[in-house]
Length: 219
Image (tube, rainbow, N blue to C red; front, side, top):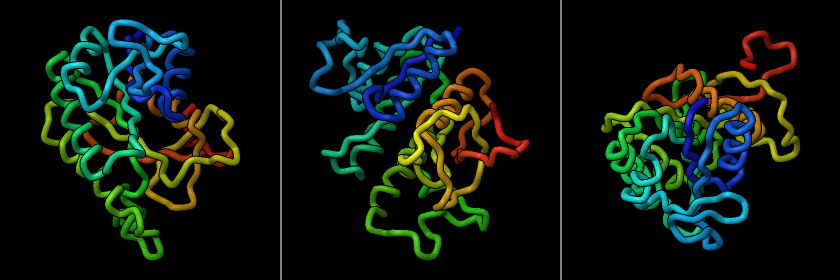
C-alpha cells in the first residue's frame, strides 16, 4: 500500500484518481482549493482537505511522508499562462521540500507528439483558439524538466469520452491523435499505474481506449 496525495480532487480526473487509488487499497488524501473545502487541518464531509496548488508551503505540509502525488489541476477563472507555470513551480518547490520525488501530472493532448513527430497542436486543422492554453501546459512541463522530480505527464491522446464515461479497465499508450478517446476512469488507471509501477520518467505520454481485441492494452 502506498500513500498518495491527489491535488485537484474535486475535478473529474482528480476524483477518478482518488477512486482508483482507494480501490487498490492505497491510503489517499484528497486535496481541493474549492471554497467549500474546510480550513487547513480539517476535512469536509466528503473527506476533502483544503489546499491550493499555487501554495508551495501548503503542498510541502500536505506531502510529507507520502510516496507520490497526482496533480489534476485547472482553474477556469484564472489566466492559464500564469496558472499552469505557477502551479508547476509550487509543486516542484513543495515536493522537493517535502522529500517526495514522484509526481504524476494530468497533462494535455495538444502538446503530445503525433505519429509524424509534430505536436498535435501543430497538426493541420487542429483548432488554435486555445493555443495560449496549450503553451501554458508546455511551460509547466518545462518547469518540471528543470527540477529534480521524477515526474510523468499523462494525458488523453485525444480527448475524454464524455458520451461513454464507463471504466473498461483497459488503456494503451498512443501518440497524439485528435480522434482518440478515453474515459476519466480509464485515465485514472494509467495515473495510478504510474504510482504503483513507475514505467515512464520525466516525459509526457498519451493514453487512449484500445479496441477490444488489442493485445497491447494494459489491464
